[in-house]
Amino acid sequence: MWGATLVVFFCAFGAQETSSHEIGVTCDEKMELPPYGNASPSLLKELKMELVTEDGDDMLNISWAINVDVSIEYLTATRIVIAGELPLHCEYNPPLAKANLTGLEQVWFHYLVPASTGQNEVSAANLPLPPLGSGLSYKSVRLWISPPKPKTTTVKPKPTAVTVKPKPTATAVKPKPKVTEAPGNLFTMIAVPIFGVLTGLILLISCFIIYKRCGANFSLLGFTRLPTSPMVPVSVLLVYPAEDPLFQRAVVALAEFLQWHGGCSVAVDMWQQGKIAELGPMRWLAEQAKAADRVIVICPQPSHCPPSHGLSGHSIPAAARDLYPLILNMVGSHAKSPGELAKFWAVRLGERQDKGPGSLAVELRACRSFCLMKDLNKLCRNLHTQRQDSKATSGLKFRAGIAYSETNTVKLRDAVGQLARREGEPLKTVITGA
Image (cartoon, rainbow, N blue to C red):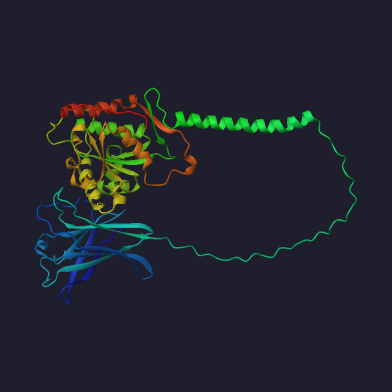
């Protein structure tokens, strides 16, 4: 994290002129949410990132170009989001609308940050952002930096002393007397090993048949076997909109089910309120999303559903109102990277919401979606079979799978069922062999 404010003068070059204009840029770290406005500037023209050397240190040179058009009068700052760091707000002095940019089509600016090995990702957008649902507002670039190769040294082996033993002299060897085996003993010596090998083969074949018939898809007394459990649980980040206590109860039930019966390690704001207060919602969300194997975004209820205020014990954390628009913004910034976007899944609570991508927020329409309770098995199975990292090793392929029964889903089905009844729809629950 770079806590110091960087003030640099940059040169802006036009596409039609060769003259330069000095414009001051001040970049500060800010934890606040980005501003939105009905009148907003156009998108960034271009965003680049390259590795450079500055005074012997490896640095990342972040470059961005701003369109010089009529919307520049609404531009207040440019927001730069570096993965794993606090966002930067870069303000221009003088404001670009008041600078002498006559004849220029675009203006370039540059910003240097220390480079780190591995994946470096940067997203940027002009502020204020357009209203939610207006489409993408960020441009993103990524750069992989390989770690330096360790220096190798060649060590010459020391010569070893060789001791030569004298050859033994030949001695007369008396021939051994021939031993004639009795026919009964010879048959026993041959039959016993053959019988042992056949017995072992029969046992192996029997175990394989039992495993194929009963082990791979074991379903007994309402229990459902999920795919093989890795050494560590699947880490899941759960983000949801702030609705009402009835909706909050369903979110809590889903988080508890994944934590205690789904083989997952769940991170959700209601369980980490102290950490959120310490780091702030934006930094907490960035760290959790980076560390999670999967990010599950709960979709809001349809607007025609009347709010419920009669359910106590399920208060809505204050951070929930900030986290949901932040996660939509994060999903939108990954829209052009299918690999990164695959990490984000959308979950809808209730059958009536299962009406195709049109019922989802614009940012979530490209994400994989599930509908509870209908897709509960499908959700749990895919959490384990499509994890992005390689924490599970080949030595764990034959460990017992995670199993849960229908009794484990009672609380979740009851909470989702109340939402379904409020919408006037039937609840479908499918628990079958995975």
